[in-house]
Every structure is written in structure tokens, then in C-alpha cells.
Image 1 (cartoon, rainbow, N blue to C red):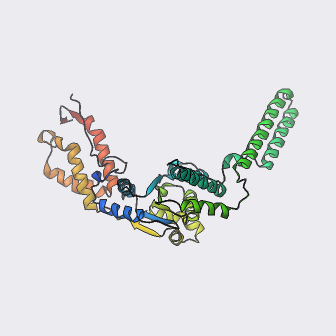
Image 2: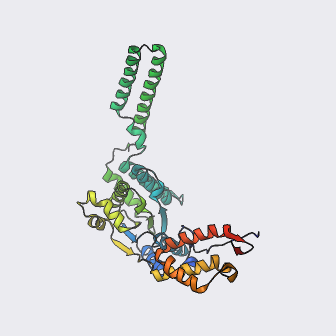
Image 3: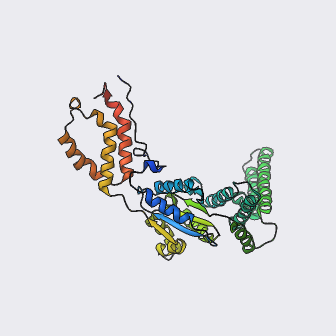
Length: 362
């Protein structure tokens, strides 16, 4: 049996990953991406802005974002940018801390004195706004430590009542009590170290940060992708953070999401009107239309030809008429967007070699 090698198109058809470069664009969106990149780059702001790229799953939001960042990188005076994906983080607190941390890292990446000062100012503001070491600091709660000690005392009392070996139980209880007190002390220490010891109010800390950010020669664009993959409470927390920081000088947020999912997540805090709440956060939206089904089917046909066209022979029982009927009547109705197309091509590419012997389908 010959070695069979089936290659997929570089454009990402047959893979879940979005395209990375203009050379892979098969939807003619390069010009659209370049216009958005120009708008973002030319925005030098005393107050920040929040943009949105909106579209359903499989519409190509992440691919468009990659085309935009490619354009930004190609321009010598293009804006700096950061790609933040909240989905890779854990709970809401972790997402909030990661957002500030990554923006601070990007602001300080030049390692100049001014850049490092900006990064420190943002970290200070982030710590004041979100708290630092939150999970361990919660362990510093006095009532929790007292409760743990009382619980360990109860262990000894119960063990005595049922005639267990008291010295052994006492040692275990003493260890648990020591552990509880240690966690309490560690949490208290982190609470002290994590606080802003200057005594400045949050407003004053923010003013210092704004002064540093106004020194930027070009804005920093923060792309926040996959928002619609988060849990509803995480979506609410993330958008609260964006709303609270939407007017920081020279910081531009670009949010990527499916509107219906995000609006529904916001309804509990928006009197049932998530859309109105979202409109208070996002100033400018770019709506990404669905790829026409005819275009999806054309791309699917081309990719199928690349993957399996060499085996469309009489020896394999191939009939153009039968294939045309099957493609139009059975396959096309099930393929509604590019994501469906990619999955189908991936499946065919994975399974086709299992049915080949000497270039003949078995």
C-alpha cells in the first residue's frame, strides 16, 4: 500500500484555527480589515474608546482580527496592540487580574524609564481596583480562622466521647489548627502587602495613571476575543471592567463577540435589556455579515477537490451526475457556514486514507 499524504489548504479550511494572514483570505475582507486598522491607528485620544466586532459563531471574527493586526504590524506608525483572550483564564477574579497584568506588561515592554513607570502605574491601579492575591487574602478572615479552631476542638471532644486514642487525635487536631492559623496569618500578610500603602484614594491613583498614559505617542489597542464563550457571570464581570476603564487615555478596547449571547448575559443587571446596557459600553461597532451560503458552498467544493479530487475516477465508481446530486441534495443543506465546512473537510481528510489502497478507494 502506498503512503497517502493529503494536504489541506493553508487558508485554514479543514482546521478550526482562524486565518493568520491576508494571503489566506478567501472572503475578500482584507480591505475591510485595513480600513478598521486605519481607524484604530489614527485615534489618538485624551479618553479611550471601546469598539466592537460583532458576528455569529463561524462568521470569521477572529480571522478579521488577525487581518487587522497584520495591517497594524505592517505600518511603521501603526498602533501597538495586545491580544487578550479571557477564555483561557479561570474564574472572574483571575480574568480581571490577567487583563490588568497583560496590559501592564505590554505598556512596559520597551523597558524605558517612562514605559516602566506607566506599567507600575497601571499595576497599582489594577491592584487597587481588583485587589491582589484575592483567594489567599480571603483566608485572612478572622471568623474563618476562629471557626476552624473551634471545629478542631470539636474533633477532640467527639473522639473522646467514642473512646478513640486521644493523644493521636489531639496531634491531628493540633496540626489542623496550626494549619488554619498559618493560612490566616498568610492571608493577613498578603492583604497588607497587596494594599496601596500610600493612602491615596482610587481617584488619585487613577489620575496618576491617566497622566502617564497621556504620554503615549500612539494608542494601545486591546483586542478581547471569545467573550461569547465565557460563562454569563464572567461576561458581566469582564464588561464591568471594560466599562470602568473605557475612558483611560490612549487605551482602545476592541471586543469580539456574538451580540445575542452577550446581551442575554447582561440582562440580569440591565433590567432585562442587555442590548441597552451594551450600548452604554461600546461606542462604535463593526458588524460582520454572515458569509453567503453560496460562497461557503463554493469554498467547500474547491477544498473537496483538493482533498479528494485525485480519487474521483471511474475506477472508484465516481459519477459526476451522482456526485452532483449528492453534493447539492445531501451535503450542501448541512453546511451553513465556514466552520461547518472546515469540520467536514477535516473529517474527510482524516478518514480518506483509511479507505485507500494503491490510489483506489476500498
